[in-house]
View (spheres, helix red, strand yellow):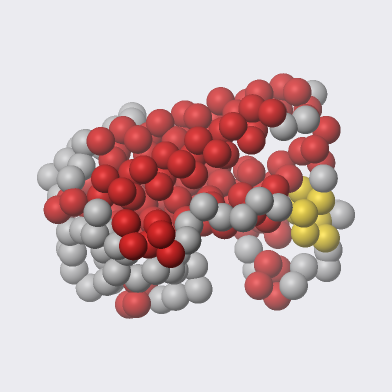
Length: 188
């Protein structure tokens, strides 16, 4: 069963990543950085937040350091060099991408690394616990804590919650925001 689960996860991650590629190829910097109104996050927030969170979450799942560093920041030129998980909407409405082509390169680097890791993952590793119970306060209130097994959050839980489900949530925001900038949705 774990081989089938891993195969499904690999296919779903590739499909979700393909939506991000499709979205970014059909937008330009003006679309991504569009400011609709107070309280509405720009597409730049959703794109960077999700990609950077995948990068950081990957470290928790694999032990490998994130890709994002000062060199990427100087190339991508995020106005706020932070994924914003612990910041308010009022702070993050100012998020903008400076170099969209460099951002897309960063995104592809993160996504390719995740897919390559999943391609070589031993299915038995899906049950490895990455955060044991009892959870620290910062984790206890998360969706992944609700999903977690009795022993804690497993590699499978992490990939499902932190990468896949989180990515689909932000893709939904991106699809909605595309309508605000005059672009259509991508899926039915």
